[in-house]
Image 1 (cartoon, helix red, strand yellow):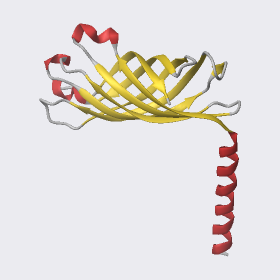
Image 2: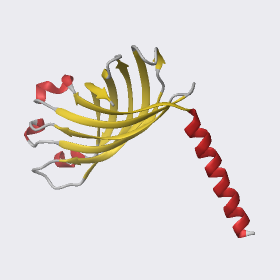
Image 3: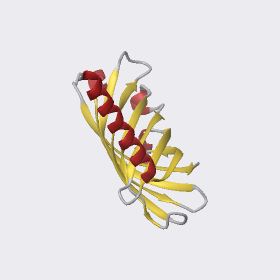
Length: 172
């Protein structure tokens, strides 16, 4: 009986995997250079995102990736984070020409303050739009209201930080 259940579950996963694979219309790898221009009063900041996007027929698709972000002069302590990102997006417009892709996801990871002990946590949602050009280049804007624990440096348990970011990148 146990082997029959295992065989049935295996067949179900094979069927679902094959069905989902057949529905993939497009997938891409994306590299983006990002920044938070609204925070330039506190100093220069820059990051790099990698993201893999899947696009299924008519329903959009998931994305998964990561980000490394550096903010060397923030509060005279330095700051950087390394996070994972995942969510769902859908592409609208000409699939081989100009199109746009709104997305909604979740991000989480670690905040590092080089002059202070950690570890500190960053978690929160992200909302954005990516505008794709026919040549593989794109621009994006996003909003991420994160919850962070690096405010322990100032005697607080946690705080929220609203990040409005922008980026440019390429798909391959």
